[in-house]
Image 1 (spheres, helix red, strand yellow):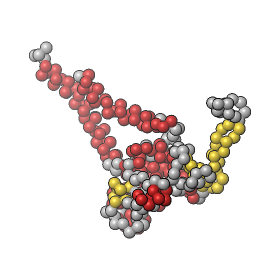
Image 2 (spheres, one colour; image 1 turned 90 degrees about the vertical axis):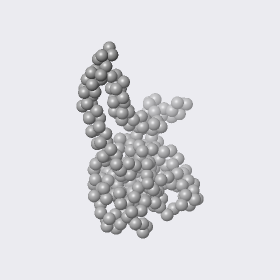
Image 3 (tube, one colour; image 1 turned 45 degrees about the vertical axis):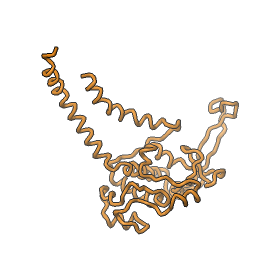
Image 4 (cartoon, one colour; image 1 turned 30 degrees about the vertical axis):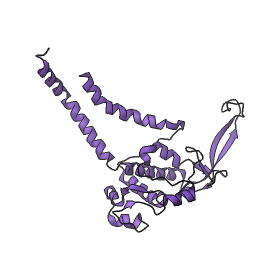
Length: 253
């Protein structure tokens, strides 16, 4: 009986512990991504941002355009507003850039984004896309607070604007470096505003991350709903299973 209960509870415990483990991975403080997988408007907005700012270099080769019809879009809307390279609605989300060209132009081929949200996590992506700042020491002129010395420039800098890293000296010992360095605190200051306010840009990134989570597993919502139903069903029949076990084994004891 104890083994049966442990078997039923193990998937629940795993789901609870996994997000915390992913959030602490790498030692970087991540902001919570306020995504909502069932928010169709957010997913549609994220699809538009993905097509305009990500799909120039990054593919999503495990996702077909017509799968977006599940988000309330029809074929005409997908073709007219999201596809810019002549692909058909039933095609995969590929890009014309080859891996060879990617290595030549950027030093490394831009990764496919089909399962990037499953690999990195929504919080990592949300923090990363909001963490770009200008850095003249980098070949692209950009760096990132989450991914130090990143090779990718900020694809949405016109929306976010340009920030720079600024170190401010502070009084007292708080913030002092381990080897006797001067006490300082690091801030990121906006030097050139973008076309969006900070709140608007955060919402745009949220929608984009929401979409990236969706394409990582489009059936995730229905799968989770089915999983909850199955767990409730198993817990409902647990007393019957226990009584049946006692009935079968009563003569043995």
